[in-house]
Length: 154
View 1 (spheres, helix red, strand yellow):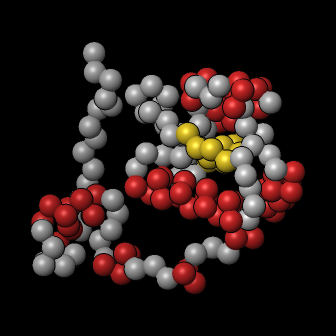
View 2 (cartoon, rainbow, N blue to C red):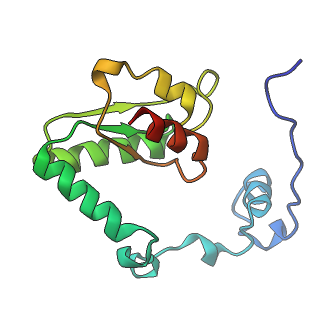
View 3 (cartoon, rainbow, N blue to C red):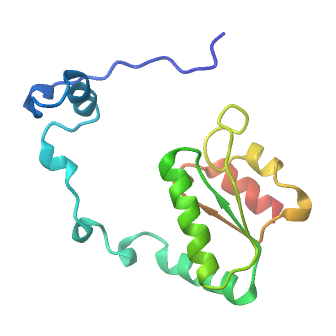
């Protein structure tokens, strides 16, 4: 019995439209991910949604302000890939620069905990180190069971 999911073959239609200077394999990978025009790879800061457009942003800001003011214990739930490690480091440095003193991080092992904030990951946070606030970076949007378990733990 395999632990790995089945490999799903994605369509790579439109790969021929990408620059011929790129290797065919890269062009096919990009097309399989929906990139069929090089313009789709360019992003400007102005293209990002404004923070106030993000659902729940005001509540998140207020919660972080309280955590800073009251010096809560905060744990960052990161991901082990490059953008997860970067966002974790950025969150830690940012919160420290605002004066937060009790900040930790945890990175799930996908083979043991699954992906993101899961009940199994929460089980690996010792009771003595239980945070007052969990912040997910590069994960968390689908962590419904993990959020529920975190609420049950207080």
